[in-house]
Figure 1 (cartoon, rainbow, N blue to C red):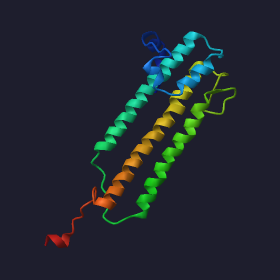
Figure 2: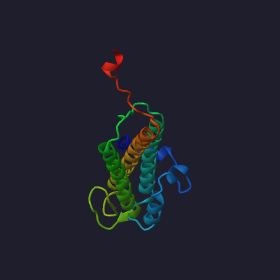
Figure 3: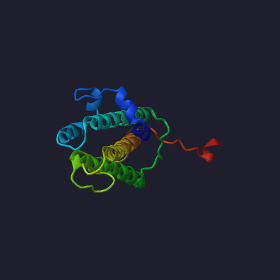
Figure 4: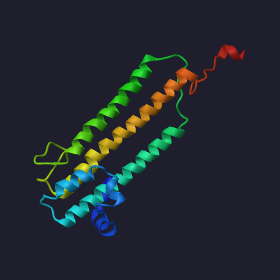
Length: 183
């Protein structure tokens, strides 16, 4: 979906007004960093308007994903655990939970840095690139990794909570069918 937003960015920038006071612009907190940095940038105002429209609209798509993920985690019924306590399940859940937090931390810091003077790969933006390349990097790299990290944290945080509830209160426990009990 973000690639589609990038492809139709010109159309969107003519139809959607993203000014410094708009809610759409404020949904992506890093836009404030970009606003300060664009004051002395080599880009013209139409390019900057296109950039903020594309980044803000892509952010709305990722926020919709995150809202769906929260709703899904709250109402999911497909998770059950064995009656016995398992250290492997605990390690698995904690590994992915903290991996998600690591993604959030790393890409949060990279994104917070904003535009640099040199490019450091696929996830760093620079004034030496075109504004389209920078928007693509933010939308397809930084934003994607941040929201995927948030999704992983929600997924495994929800699993961890369910696992704790199964150990503490017996919720979400698989009832095994013992063939000897039936007879």
